[in-house]
Image (tube, rainbow, N blue to C red; front, side, top):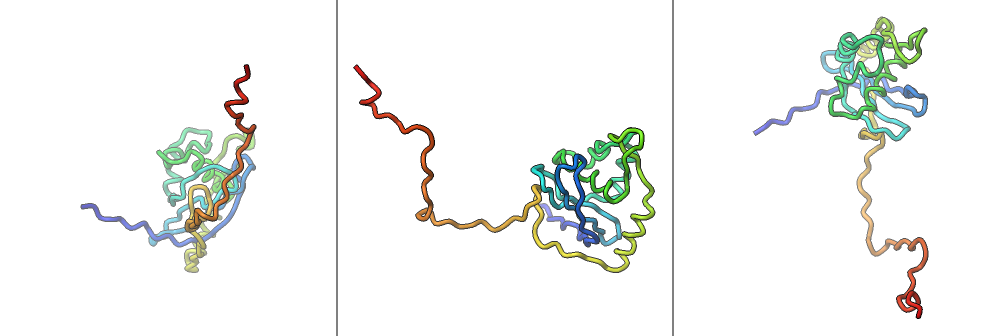
Length: 178
């Protein structure tokens, strides 16, 4: 018999939005902390059509993945954190790191990034942690960034059948000419 493991309780310190790396959609994200004050990130919405994982990712794991990744840095540095998950999540998370100032585009090659000092970001998070900030999340987050609603129950008798498209079918007698 297996025991259910409770998900860690994360206090949401900050909710924000940013553009994805291609500037084609807007991402929503949360920054939170667990009971040991470890900072975590998660993607909460995407105005575009891509799926993503809503799992919390510890900043410690993100920094470790970046440290171990080949240089120059790209969003592929985060690939080990999302094995078996949507490939969009790594680039979406990378966009949040860019928005928070944890990485910046390389001056010589804007397709790659360099890691930035954490001081300003850490100071902001320390203030939010110390203030017991815990922002509410109004609805369940899904991988498409939409709110899950209860299913609408429809009475089949009230449904209207769709009209057929295309040409009307010819009768057999008209189809066979002598």
